[in-house]
Image (cartoon, rainbow, N blue to C red; front, side, top):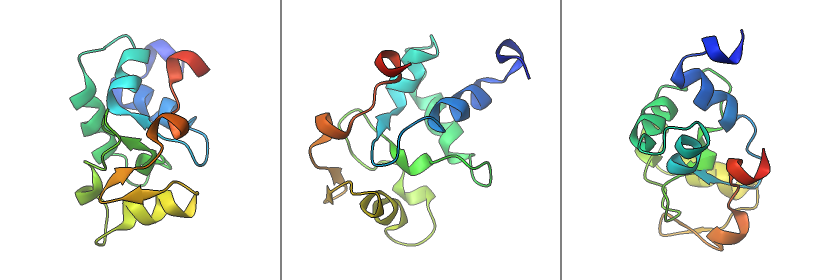
Length: 109
């Protein structure tokens, strides 16, 4: 599909698939990159609906590095476990060294 024919959710998924292993980004950073800076919540809705689409939704957190979407993952701590398996440290649902592991699509792409 041509990029202009992709739905907003599909555009979100295409960006999320580019987040490097061991890095995280925020809902707002994806929204801003897509030219919809005030649509962070819509990015969250997209992540919630991304199951089965091969999207690393666990790498998308809120602007403060909190795992606000964790309740959408199966199990008690799956989002945290997935991040920790990539070397991202999480304490009390908070990404540690957030600025170090943060990936900004506006700068990287």
